Image (cartoon, rainbow, N blue to C red; front, side):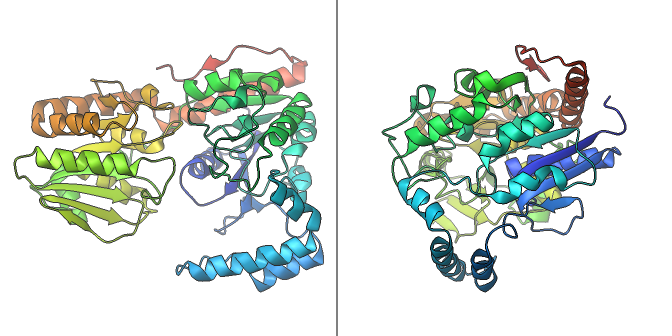
Length: 465
């Protein structure tokens, strides 16, 4: 294991959120629980943990910028329109205060003007042994500082999407221009959106940054690592790892379905499907239209039985079509409550247009719930087709409906797949394995750095699938 004096500074967009931010948070707290020096540097701090350190971008900007932030703070107003109005007024004021930055944004150039990044290594009382970065998009990190930071201390980048490889987008879908330089972007609206097509400029700028950097690269899936090896990031790589995202299997475990349904107010006799995703109906990465169409088809094939689809992660009115009910449930912070939804479901359905290695699939498997999912991105590395669930082609509502119906009507198959899913999760997606994988890698990096070993190796696979 790593040395007791190990100090790790992780970097993330925000401290409290799902997805990539949750991965960073869980690792941060796990290291601290094991007695290591552990800090989390963030662009936005929502909680009050003393070891979560706010990157001082705002205080290092001019007085006019601070004035506009004070007048129109980033309010978490639940009404929505007030927050949008405040943001628009704040952005207008900041554009007047920083005209050069505003002009770059209008030109479609990605915004790297975040001066707090230069203070990153001084946020902790002692220099960290490792700086472990997660998503660097989201308006808080100066990517140009990567080369400087990587010369001072080993830097790990855990990629959760493709943004570091492209001219602006977090997922490229079927476009492969990222391999050669972007330009003439087919969709400027893909997050993070840009106003004009400067994707070729953005791509070249990232390439120049990486050429001056020495980076350790981690991904949760082979699929994303394969892309990295074909990208302009590849020359900067010192060493790589594929380390699957883990889940807490003490929480996400098989449990009594009847008790879970009773706790959540779900009818005992209903056929229950579960799908998760923040703002599912508008989420560009998800495929809600295919999900809804497939569930409607499945409902027609169930001979009048009640079918309930629970969409976890969105607050919206209930939809009813004949014997089909679509129930929307707001985002739940309590992982025990989230686990109950998986435990209450007959099948977990994950319809996506793009995904790297969704934690929700691993959570469902941990709870012994078979999965029917779109075969995109890293999902085929999680779901073993016809063993722990079924994989279907992108956008194919008929195939999705057929597999859902097959599981709902074949109790023995559903039970067998659920048992195999839980067994597979214990072997491949245990959170302690993820923590150990990173800690052991830190030790190796520190040892090689001290020895002056700068060799570039082929990536090693942690938790082989």
